[in-house]
Image 1 (cartoon, rainbow, N blue to C red):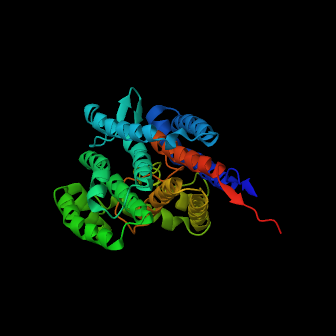
Image 2: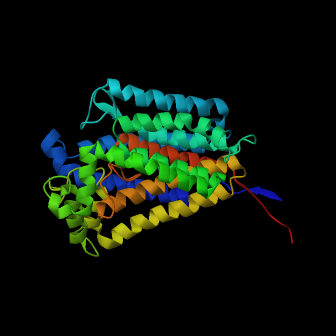
Length: 368
């Protein structure tokens, strides 16, 4: 007998806990800054709650879909077209923090690359799941990858090397899961290595971050400042932390404590125990996501959910690795937790897509 498993309740719980904890930490890390800058301690909190409401509505809508229209061919190609259009549009709306990453709508900003990552995963999953597609036919594979290459070039042009590397890693994961032979992946890595060196060589800021990662003390007043302050914050938290709201490093010592380095504030305020629980939540997200992929019923959704799951987990891994000093600074937010509308909405969108596919899982029950 075939029975529907239903929506993965454990994954729902994980998403809810990460998101609510994120709201708490955003307020803890921004209240003083918001009071001084805007005269309202709850300024960032209110904005984040607004984004949370929008993202939650999207999550509920996507999860409740009886027919997953997002898997249809026309929507797949539309999503890639929209992603490329958004990444082109950023170059016409002015720089923010010395890069073209956002589209501005008055006081609001949207970061198209956050949603381009999802579009790439959807596109690759669709193209590599077709019966006529042989992933090891390198000529056909090259033409399949052309839209992804265009997106990567645009993101590199912003510049946003962190997102560029993340999309590259996720694409490799999907290609590997789809059956691409390891020797092709290895040859591609060897071929692309000089390109990475050239990218870093002609980008002094990124090169400085690499040097600061290797020797942060020598760059303590420039490129290594954030990394060192982050390590100080986590180290001062000890096992049990300083207590929620009691972070010292957020008081203008740690830049972007509410976004890219929010895990450092978690470590300082919630200590080793709180940090470990956050890591456990993302580990559980990985386990449940891969389980949903395995039971999703077809190659297309298997590749899609696998890609989405690794996207969330890799982002978390990179973000946490940066804050504890084992990875160069990349500007990648912590999913569900970091302040920022685009990051939160894209994370909840990913959660909704995975939950919707989990809703359509079926299992075969054998009678005794």
